[in-house]
Length: 186
Image 1 (cartoon, rainbow, N blue to C red):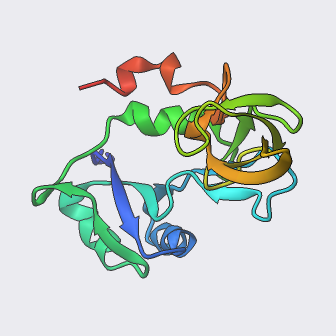
Image 2: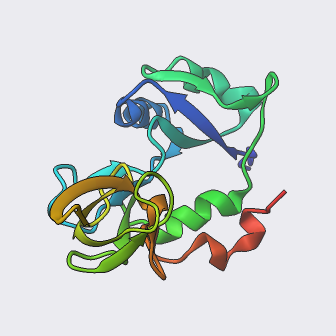
């Protein structure tokens, strides 16, 4: 007779750039973890794979019996808590991300902004200007836009939130909007 142990998903905050180290040590202890990353769409990026949530990963544990394995793993800072109590995630949240990831936890990102595309700047010092995309969004969500100012062309980097187009930015295959029950507004 096997005993079934209830395990829930929790969010772990790691030291900077130590997510893979945490995954390795948790795996050696038999703890399931998931560290989602994005493969960025353009080949112009120096880093084509970037963490979806830098310094955060998901672990599936029975908190009462296995929390110490997580807390004492090299690279772990803490289990994310509200107050003093770690709160488990809905299983659907992690499953939503896993369904879009490959076996290595990498999700293919896409950008609907492409080089040569005309866009309008919405907000900031260049509000209302029209420009041409030079480089699609990078891992930090910045896009390089060519603007014409005072009869000269200048290149500026802006956050994708300042670029107005029908569908701007970087997204995942299968939008969060496809599953609103997993991410309630309240």
